[in-house]
Image 1: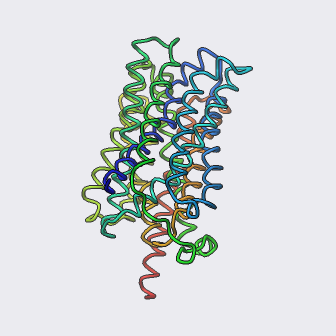
Image 2: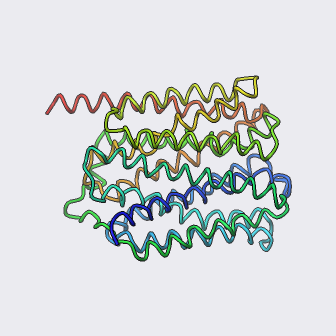
Image 3: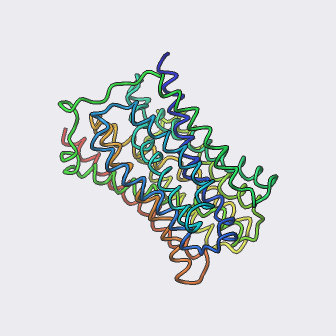
Length: 397
């Protein structure tokens, strides 16, 4: 088998991550109705998911470069599949449904965390011209978007057909994807990890202002993307009065489509587009989208803001990976893992903060999303700072 098969297995790995990150939020309205869960407890599930992913990232950073890629990638798919099966079963057998949901979330979050640490450095290590690596990274991350589209559209239509009371069928169906990709990762060729003797140490990275900026940028990128994405379905249904089907399609599904389109565009033409200015533009556009979605009294314009935000944030996560990889080419999987920690931290804190602000103020999700504007603004500020650092370092050379 060739590295092409490895690349496609990595693409499917990101589809798997999209499943574990986006299936439960689609069912928030079901959990709220069936189990009487308030917004803060639903937001806590998102916090638990990305918090467990964050802890997994921290642990994986220490060992991945020593263990190699294959074993941890297989384990990632085992945990993802097991967690999805538990999502269907645990609420019915646990002491309370919420405890069951929490157990399932933690199990598949371990799989998602391993995927976040492992898949990007594998693709970055595959043979390819250096000038095309940023575009290749953006193309890889577009498969997360297409996985999200498949989860949202497929789950929404299936749920409409079988009824909300049979929601537990959905996790069982989606568990087939990580099970199939598990077999692929047992067979495809794997690149070598960066040896300890040649790898840029984490302590050296932590002493570099450019890497500190990249960590903050990842936190802001994760929060900017996931805050709008995770709450878009419930925001559309409750804030805009849309039905469950149209709320999912107009919110997270269209969000994911436009995010995928943005990543494919950069994947095709990224070699001609300077990355730092593109990041600044993306952050500014995301800021406008947050304002439109939260402040517009026109439901159509609010939908447009929510969906267009997917395009706006499309470059932020893979773009930060590419900035760091170009600046620190021997960072290895550990470097990607540290960045993933901060991305997951933002992905956990952002949606939870939105739910907490909405509950505390009594202003609904529009108020929570308005508070979330701080994250894309931070993207703009840190991207400008990173560009200034890079310019100064070039002048010194």
